[in-house]
Image (cartoon, rainbow, N blue to C red; front, side, top):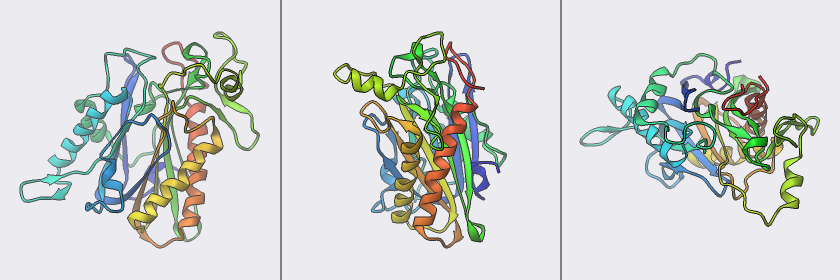
Length: 315
């Protein structure tokens, strides 16, 4: 399986700056996909998410941009729009076609060069690099500077990254996820309950501290708002905007199965959903599959992440 690109009509492209340790990821659907969104974190940074509201007049989106760089990284979405406009993609208006590209960012300014962030040119390059090939995973794209397990600070954190996974259902239905994992919390394998990547007891060690216990003990202390997990799920099924919104809500449960703690006031967790296909399906079946795909994508993200900027990875 290829991950998110298993869904026909979807292309994924990454651009990574390994010197500054940041990057962005473009998910393109030029023919238009019905979208939804679920924002669970309290420190989110987003753009164009109102277009995903079931009451919004635009029926489809043409891409999604995930980026590092904190709020500065939202600039990269303009590059994706520029790429799509040049190819005649977008909502027809009397003067021009306007591509609809929701975006979300994560905070990676603390690992590389804080003054270098994803730009419109990087977003355009990510869109130009988008293909139907298997999704590149690990420390790439929006996950280049991602980290996890920051209950004891960056000196005792571990690398996060990009992961992608597909769940197959009867009748040819597919639900796939792509996740950029930059969580405050630890990542646990839900099958065993064991921490896979997270806060370490010492800067040089690999013994885990258990971030939830650390935070419970130091609850009055302020925590840095430098965390976010961003997920995109897609199905080759025909959904309404209401159903796509529900799919995003279901998919968010996959974060709760793998990240401890999750959706905190110091995380900007966002889940996007995309419906791109003609098959009919029960939204509950799709939702269960979406949550499972997100969980597995999170595990892949940390297992395939490489050490960067002095932060150790598992790959």
